[in-house]
Length: 541
Image (cartoon, rainbow, N blue to C red; front, side, top):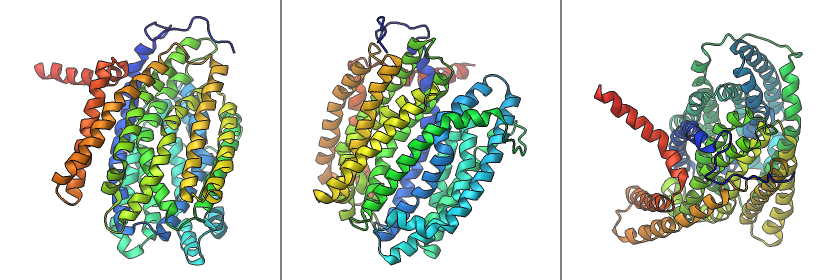
């Protein structure tokens, strides 16, 4: 498709100006991010508790591998459907009739429960085969441990599935509070289970913790359903089922391919060293922190708005709304990536290196993190682009690109790991290649389908964010090095060093953003300033 000859500049207004949408998107993303902040804070506690209790070993690698089973099945049956079909379609019903929306949700919950019960039963029966498929490189003792962990954890799939359907309902109504509460509750469940049960159940307490976590995540969303009349409705003729399946069929193929990639990744990692999966999981956790706080929060905030825009009729409005989200992502994800590189090793030591987790484990995790960071910015912009296609009921294009990404990983990662003898680091580099290639191709196909984003200031925002991150990196890394001789020993000194260095780097970034007139800073601060102003106004009376 030819680019529009009248590309708006960053200061021009479209029929629905991105600047007018930005505060709304920032507010919605802010709610998601607040939930994510609470979740990530509890997640840090969770990871510290798990690392201090169990360290990095073959058993922890077994859990880290099999804990992907509920995630993979959930994504296959519900999670991948959520953004590709459930939210766009439920958003249409939410805008028209609340009673019809209740009927649709009743149908989805009924069918979801029936299907998920069957899936859980099958996984319980086939647990030994599932384990060998995932971690066939382990010895027999670790395989038995992994099988036990699988059988404990798979009932969580049922709870996750129903919870995901409730999330789709809340997102469709643009009510982000209840889903945002679910993630902190999930992490709290894991923490409680490990603290209370590790002494009695050992490594099995982690699988039990997932069950507790899933239950809490589901429970905190129920108050948001109190005004709905839900009922048992096994209606296979309901038209919404066909619409969802038509949209989801291509995504299903993509998720199957992605899951194959995950299985290959786990299988290859189990053939390197027994601790590799845990090292990679800890590094991945740190990568997921900014992705969850930034990219996912903004993507979920922008999806309902994009879903209500017909790009064929309002192309500028559609591109402008997406570009606002992308610029917010870049404004936040670039300094996050730079800060993680500058302070990665001390952050890993602060969070994980306690109890059974050793300095050697910290170094191995840091090595993985450095290469994962290559793909972080690409992964961050990739998600809004995928959601943009989903919002226009185009699920085929992201699927094709996803398949290409997995093929690239399978082609690169084993060669680097075993031919070039890079071990688990070769798998990490392969993942970075996959994420980078996926984002680049998505940008290319977006231009073909939606005329691209030229003229909306994306490149300018990226350049300014990179420029503003230079003093961040210098000040964060330099101040941490200078403080080392003066900090007290132990976790308090580690926390002081990381927090002070991060704060100084953050202030440097904000100062440079102000100097460079990055509008995204004002957009993010606008809802907060408005709220504070309203509090001050109320206090006057």
